[in-house]
Structure formats: C-alpha cells, structure tokens
Image (cartoon, rainbow, N blue to C red; front, side):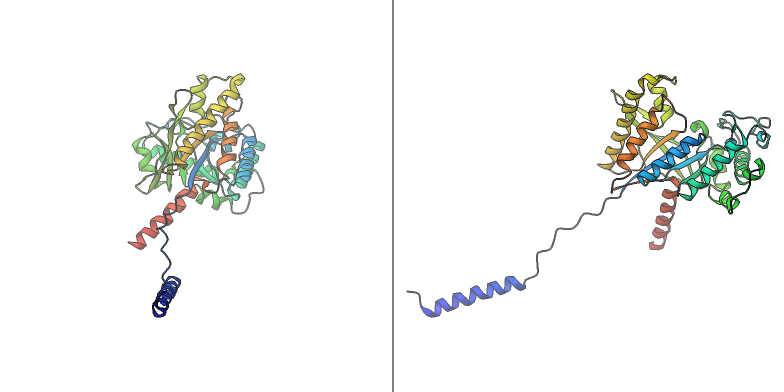
Length: 338
C-alpha cells in the first residue's frame, strides 16, 4: 500500500504540472509566408478606330472589372474635310497610312467613346497619328508628331465644328495622355530622346523574350509585349493579335478556321497566364487591335480569357497608367524609407 505522504506528493506534482501547462506561453505559430503579389494583366488596343469595338471592349471591362489602355491614332479624329490639319514628318498635308475618319459624325461618335472610356477609368495613350514607320525619324520629327497628336486631340471638337465641347475636355487632352506605343513597334534612339521631353511617362513599344518587370530609363517606364509559346509545337509568338493572325493564316482571312484559331489563341494566353500565376507573377501584357482578324477570332479569345482571369481574386487587369501610378508611389515610398 503506498505511503499517504507519497500519494499526496504525486498529486501535488501532477497539479503543478497541469497548472504550468495552463499558464505556459502558447506555442508560436510558424513564421507566416510573405503575401504574394497579385497577378497583373495589361490589355491594350492599338489605333482604336471602330465604334462598335469601343463599345464591345468597354462592355467587357464592365463585366470583368478590368481597365484597358487604348492607343489612339489621331487621324481618326479628322474627317476627309479636315485631314489637312495633320502633316506627318517628311510628308505632305493630309497623308496617312491608315486613312481618316469617314465623316464628322464618326469623329463625334469616337470622341464620345474616348470621353466615356476615360470617365470609366481606362487609359488613353498615343499611337501617334498617321501610322508611319518612324525608325529613321529624328528627335525633331518625333516631337513634331507628338505635337500634332496633342493639338488634334485637344482641339478635336473645334476642328470638326462639333458642339458642345464637353467641359474640361482640353484640360483632359493636355494631361491625360502619358503613354505611347510606336506604330509597327518600330523605334529608334531619337524616339527615346523625345519621349521625356514631350511629357510622356511610359512607352509600350518593346518586345521581350517573355513576361518581365518593366524597367525605368530616363524617367520612362518601358513595357514590352512578351513572346509566348503558341500552337502544337509551342513556338514563341509576340502576344498580339496581328502576330497570331500572321502565324495562323499568313495574314490572310480564313474565317472558316475561326474556331480553331480562337482556341489556339485562348490556350496560348491562358498558358502564359498560368505560368506566371503559379510562378513569379510577373506582369503579363497582351495587345490587340480593333480590327476583326480571321472572323473575330482574337477578340473571341480575349473575351473568353478576360472573363475567366480578370475576375479572379488574386488577379488585377489594369491599364498601363494604373501600373505607372503605382510604381511612382512605390518609388516615392522607397525614397522616403531610404
């Protein structure tokens, strides 16, 4: 039979152990992993001509919460009657590689789309005016082209005799356009000398081997369309609808193949997205035109893609302007912290 004092001692030890367990510091949770950045997707449109495509893209944005960038060619704010307002470097007045607006009414309709898109938070960028290849232009040539763009945008209502001009339009035209994409993605050294002098904050004329963090040089943030794997052999192609059009059908319309081409484009977009979403989460850039190539193939692929990814909690489909604004804030915070 156990000695009564020994039983008491054991009981007290057990009680002390229990009390210690109750009042001991709780175990520390494992160190939490740093939050991953959201996946950024940058979707843009060049030339921005067809009114129906303005409406379609804005509707897509409303469905998905996306913000887009529209690179506008300023000749589409001039009608045949006002085309002489534009003179390209080395050309006569009223010359353009992509024509002009069909009528004064078309100009009015396009201006309304620009105004609505900007009010909805989209980014209006410059695609120059007449879609000429500027690879041999001087700095003065580029500055003249930029000045023509700003003059025509700012005075678009007055040039075409469209009234009333919306309040604040001229201030918008002077301040809103901070980005540029070169026609044909064709650039030269003189362009990058002219961009900061003309007041631009970003350029989207580059092409990269794959998604990349946009670098900053001379105050200009440089975006690049990435090459992404596409098709049965996963051959790289620039992530833009025109390049897919050339890849798929040699640049000729084949509407009978629209379904197959749309599937290929969608799967290329989605694979490029998934690689980043599940990997480093570098920004993914995709470029489009308002032109309906191969029976609307690439817009159909875009709508399918954006409808799936832009609504995801860890994804942000934003404009170049949005990205630049965030980068400027980040830079200021880094300087203040340093």
